[in-house]
Image 1 (cartoon, one colour):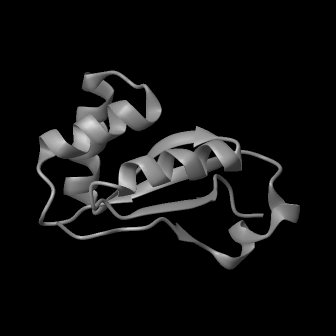
Image 2 (tube, rainbow, N blue to C red):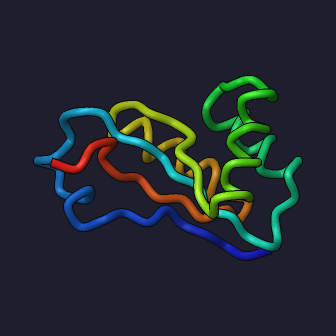
Length: 97
């Protein structure tokens, strides 16, 4: 299994930009099963299995999916949990300013 770490854009890594809503994005890959993705999303975000299945399908179909919206620190925590099973994640602001 690949070892994946969250990708942080340079502007995201700057502590002065921690205001506003942030999001966690996951990316499709060829090595995680739907069940692994669903389980990781449920554990990391506390969402329902149905919601996680929709997000896994979206990542599979479109290449990526936004899976969690919160403060920067919470999104970074969620991204770490998801990435532990080899799913590539990215934490970024919800809106481009």
